[in-house]
Length: 626
Image (cartoon, rainbow, N blue to C red):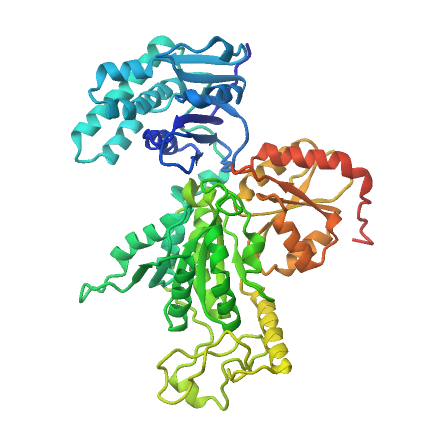
């Protein structure tokens, strides 16, 4: 049998039972690889119940620094009988399967094209540890020890991590180290270690990995820090998976960084509202009053918040919403990832509304874009929605360290103080003085007798006076559209990458690919795979809505453009078609909506399939017509 080989380049997947303490052991494994200086990308795939259902933890090891899912499993570690049959079937031919053989493996489950490693994990733990709970927890640590021997994972790093994790709790350290040693010893005595797939410190890594320091961080924590550094003092929320940890992290950091040094009093407010509707209402109210405020939610919460988002859009009030997307509609799959709120967020609320969206692809961008969102929402006087997702928000990603310029100041946009009101010849809350659609606002209490106005969600004239005049209404909503056009120069621009040079292309078509958020990492890898096969593809990563003019230019300069996203209906593609007035046939959807993050193999396969059927139908652009 030909076995899979690879140094610092393979996929390991752990199959466990939810609620058995496996997540911390699996994270220990991933973090140890990271400490070895090897690029790693872990993903926790877990059910929405508290315990009992299957859960998986996938670890991508990639010397080239690919952070997206590749697709396929080279080695499976399975301690869950419920999922074992499917787990065995998922292993690549030539791969490896480690399992608890306290009970023998059923004959019908065996495959002759993969290598099996049986370790009596349950039996070993029952013999060495006293309580059933300790036996269950440490069984996970035993297989991590065995994996250290099989994959050449440095044992001393695992011990150091345990010492860090359980500092001051010597009994826990000793029992966990004992479990590690049990697994390591069993593997070295019974198997040929290390395997043809293995880890090596100091192995060749991609230049973009070597050129800077990296940290492991999840997007929710990064966004929370962005809110701190962006000046947020108010958070109102209602708990919902997968966004809850955003406000949890904000609360933790606010306790350290939002305390008045003189009085010791808190300079922040966190309110757990009765529901998402109340939460966004509090945020809008705080923004009206001059505070920087935000909420965090997911799809069901976004649906409930639409009414207040419409109010904030029409009354022109700042508010930041961190939307960590999950699988919908309705309850959907609460612990699975999708990019399925694009249209709901872009046109949130009834009537003619357009909301500003930001699409981070990394924890670093979650931090940077959250900081920027607080400036944008005040500059544009409209809600700004950060469109993260469960994959980015709850999983650890390799990321350059977060950076902050201490000289940076908050940009509050067009806010008149008392002196500005005294100097103004004429002031109206909705008077477009500069022609960019953005009006000058005031904060409550700015002036004893100037700058007051009535904030309303109903129609009004430029002076904020109630009006049912059609002319006043049209003037107002047209100005809002003008402001949205102005926003194109404020939001982050898309990022482009030229195609990889292909000496003998297999097509005359000029191909492009558009993607956003967590679809980016596997898309870049898929493009490299396709370039190796003779298909050069230009790429552009969308980072914000409204769309920058360069997106329209990118599409028109290509014969065929693939729009890669994680939802059923191709929502980003539809948004581009609607906003840029692009012929639908020019944009080909590449979709994934299974709830697990999209893979490079999936993307490359769908593009190959499309090219086989579409190439003959598309006339290549020529220089004189391009």
